[in-house]
Picture: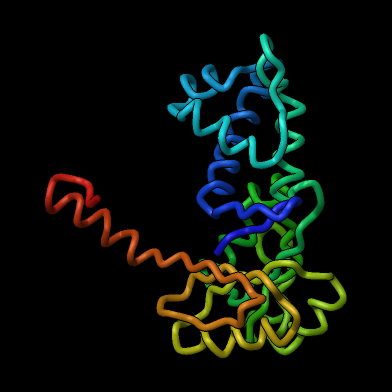
Length: 218
């Protein structure tokens, strides 16, 4: 799936993924007190490709200054705007098992502007409780109400495989347009909804292949 930027050009997901990498690099430079950096310097320090950096950034405007490079703080701010990170993004996690609780308590989300407003579950012994960081656990039937009240942007699924499609359908019906899925298997969503799946088993199997064969699968 491709993203449309201002002006009508198509920007691939690979490009936006690289923007996220550039943002992390710039945050590291900013934390170290670096004020300016060239595309070559950014590439050398973080094992990136200078030509690719310039090409990716050119999709969104001219950010560098000849003889100076990029102002780290300014470019970081621009990338956060491009990635939609210049606002608080509301997240709900459906499934308050071990994975759901761990995701809710991950401090990095909050630092990057992702606000986990609630966990949802159907287990009576969980509903009404809180995660270790204080995220409330509500009943799954409150999803639509919660999405409307909190203006939820993203739903994260950490439910059993046999409940995944039903849960996705409920999230879509509630008005969610972006879903991150940790449940195994293939799920269906309408064209206006973006679904990204993180199958940890596939990742482990890829690592197992590397260990068994002594090389990385191309």
